[in-house]
Each structure stands twice: as C-alpha cells, then as structure tokens.
Image (tube, rainbow, N blue to C red; front, side):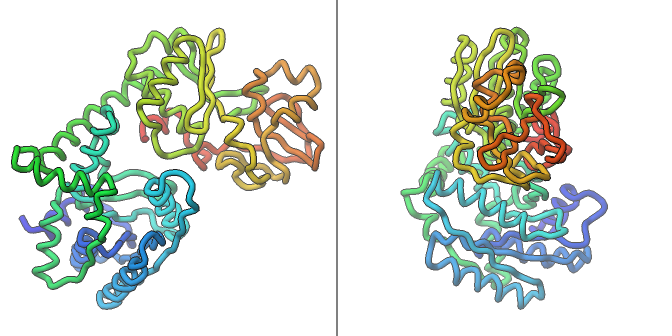
Length: 418
C-alpha cells in the first residue's frame, strides 16, 4: 500500500465519514511535516477539503525565519494560504516544554473556526519519546503512544503519520522532488531527543528498532485506557469537586478512607489529574515528585507540586491552588488565573489580607490555608466579595469557574480525556 493510500485511510479513520470543509496543518519545514503537507495536498484533490498552513518560528534558531519562508513558498506553489507565527522564550521554565505549550496557544489564536490541525509526528517520534520517558522512570502513562487524535485547548490535534517511518516520508519527498530542511538541533547531543535518535540506530541491530518500540507504546496505550476507566470508577466513589456556600472553589476533594483504600496506581492517576485540573496545566507532573507528595498525603501530611497545595485533613484530602503561584498575577476580569471569570474588575486571590478582613462568621466556611487562594473581588484595598465564603455583593455579577478554560468540562470528563 502506498503512503498516499495509508494517509487517506488514516484520515478517514481519524475524522470519520463527514470530513470538515477545511483543515489546518502545522508545518515546520522539516522532512516529516513537508511530506505531510504533500500527502495532504494530494489527498484534498480527491476529497475536496481546503487546507490552511502555519509555521511557528520559536525564535530559538536564526535559520527558522528562512525555513518558514521556504514553507510559505511551497504553499504558494500548491495554492494554499500560509501564516508564520512568532514566539520568543522568556527564559522561564523548561525551554522545550515552554515552546510546545506556546505552539499550541499560538495555534489556538490562529485557527479561527478550524476544528482540526494536523501534526506530522511519526513512528520514530513515538519510539524516541518512549526511550526518553523510560530513562526518566515513567510508568504506563508516560510510555503510552501519543494519541492519533487528541483535544487540546479548543481544537483537535490530528496525527495521521504515526504509523509511518521518518525514512519513508523522506523517500516520498525525494521521489516527488520536494523540498525540506534538516534542523541541526536534531544532531545536537545536548538534546535528549537527539541522543535517543542516535541510540535507536544501535537498538535496531538488537531487534529494538522504532517499529518494535512504537508497538510497545501502543500496547501501553491500551493499558492506559483500562487504568483510566478504573480511575473514573474510583473517582465516582472517592472524590468530589470542591464547593462552599453553594459556590465552586476550584478544588478537588478526596474522601480519605475511600482514597486510601485504592490501589496505588489509581491513587497516582487521580492525584496527577487533580493537580492538572486545579492548576490548569495541561502537562502531567513528573512521577518522582508525584509519588513523594502521595506518600506524604497518605502519611497524614501534605506538600506542594505543579502550582498546587495538597493537604490531608481529618476526613478528606484537599487539593487547591498554591498561594505563591497566585501572588503577582494581575487582577483580572476575563479568565483570571485561567479559571475564573467575573463581570467586576479587581478579581484576585483572597490572601492573608483578605482573610483578616473577613467577618468572623465567614471564616468558618473554609480552612484558612485553602481559603487564601480563593477568588475574591477588591476595590483598591477594600474586600468587596468572596462568594465561596458567603461574602457577596450584588454589584459584582456572576463569578464563574471555568476549569481548563471551559464551562462544560467536569473533573470526570477531564480525567478520562487527559
């Protein structure tokens, strides 16, 4: 079967019988993404779907601007619109993780009405990622193959080339005399992925090549689905979304006895999802610090991780926003802390100052440590409202909790999709 036929079959399986009228493509200019662009172009001639192409210039290499220009030239030849989006790293956190998250955020702002954006990840990417996460001591989730279709932000990331090898795609381009550029960082041993790419050539001789490792990752993916289903079942019995005075608090609560009775893998899965949900971060916490926090919770203590505070109380375990993660955030009206929306200006965390300003009867509704992170409305130095503690003002309008930036996503839904 040709690559064109495999691409068409994969697109049919991923998108179903009713194709959208327009699809986006993220194209860097490398061999994989340029091959995907050519495959998609040939596919559209049969299926009548329009393409929109973008290239993200991460500002990490001086050659990136020229590579984006090359992609634009090829799109002009093929007759598809192309946009270049630019980003600059602020020097905070892990550079590669920041670049990945920035890419998705830029695409979200660019896509308009597009619901699907194609990414050119291959079988080799799956194998390299498997080795990278294996070296970090990852479990089932980390070793699972990347999803062929996954909801991210407000759109679906679609990966139609996951069963294709990097060499196949480059051969396809060579036959069609297509253009591409090789990123020099792919050969820079300072990067984990480059080292794993080199290691794969050695493992291939021992029968552990990309196809074998990608197969193992796929089987881990099936195991992950089963474990996720178990975690969802456990959540129904062992947890609840936080609420106080009839208002959501943006917290996750686990019933202590029920949670402690769960098998450890399910505890870790629930805890990781709770940390992601409460912090609004799309990436899972690393397994070693996650296990450490779990051990402290099960011992009756607590800890901080992933922008969250976790504490064991008498009858429950509470996961809430870490106070230090909120300090310095600008006051908001639209999606403060990525999770709260209010008609009034001056939305920020309650903090120690707000706690001291509360009337005594309001302090009984919530533990002091967690209450300080609750959203509240201020006018200058005056505390106007903190609905979760029963302090309301009619002028502030409705305070809405938007987990992961959306009104409709429950924790259970988040658990089974992330």
